[in-house]
Picture 1: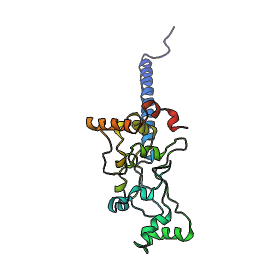
Picture 2: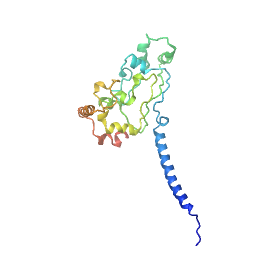
Picture 3: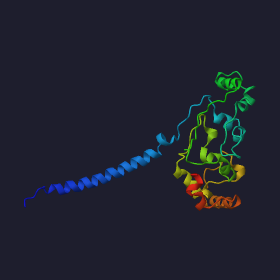
Picture 4: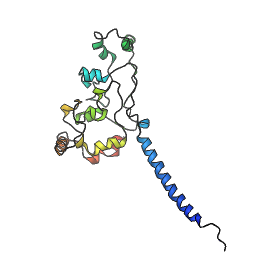
Amino acid sequence: MPQIFHHSTNALAKITIYGAIFVAVAALWATVELNRSSWNTGQWLERQQPVQFSHKHHTGDDGIDCRYCHTSVETSASAGLPPTTTCMNCHKQIWADSPYLEPVRASLRNNKPIEWFRVHDLPDYAYFNHSIHVNKGVGCSTCHGRVDEMPIAYQSSSLQMEWCLECHRHPEKFVRDKEKVFDMNWRPENKSATDIAYGKSLLAKYKIQGKEILTSCSTCHR
């Protein structure tokens, strides 16, 4: 029987198979990287707000505690946004006539809250409670970064599940004493053996659940 295909076809078939595998791996890698990119997660992207509010000025320069504006962060699932009256407690006397603060004054006059744009926006299928994290020794800067150095607030973490699980699998690396939760200068991670031992002591002190509970699907997806 005469040969239908040339001998070079064998090499071509092998190259095609290996090429297809390479293309599939490259496509998978590109998909993963795109999923992790700031284009998808919103990480590092500054959010322009209706009022030019600077956390760096208020928190970093003036030393205003996070809880002055985010009053419910220790007691409820949401950190809360300050009502206009909170802003005007100071700005009735300071920069009271500034054109930048006209949206704040208008909000007070019209009794209509300012519509801020959410910076950290988790999907609806992910349950997150601020109070439990704060009361277990997870600092503001652990999730939100150095807000006291941000003229315009941005999302400093990816907020993806792998990022959450890194803390839930190794909580001893990230917990701190509850008195230091609002300390922006505290180290972002416990790395040395001494720091890890300190973190483990807090797990017992604050009765933080084991990895089986922390990494259970139902903990975050309810």
